[in-house]
Image (cartoon, rainbow, N blue to C red; front, side, top):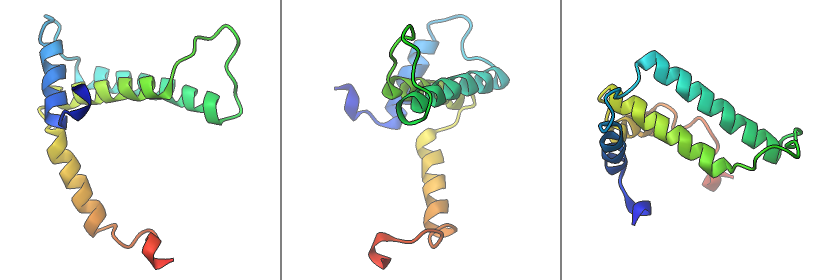
Length: 111
C-alpha cells in the first residue's frame, strides 16, 4: 500500500523514477524555480478555495491535495539531487522546534 511508505522509501521511489531519464535531476537553481512554480500553483488553489478569488468558469478544477503532491515531488527531487536525507533533515528541524522554540507558543495544556 502506497500510503504507508517512509520518507526514505518516497525518496527511493522518486530516485528510481528520475534515474530512467538521461537528463536526471535538474540543477539546484532550476529546482528552486520548479519549486517556486509549484508553490505558486498551490497558492492559487488555496486562494480559490479559501480566498476572495473564485475560479473562472473555464478553469480546470484542481485539488489542493494534488498541488501539495506536486510540491512534495519537487522537494524530494531537490533533496535527492543534493544527497539530503529528508528524514534526517526533519529530525534536525524537530530538535530545533523542541529546544530553541519550545516556549514560543502557548501550549494547549497551559490555557
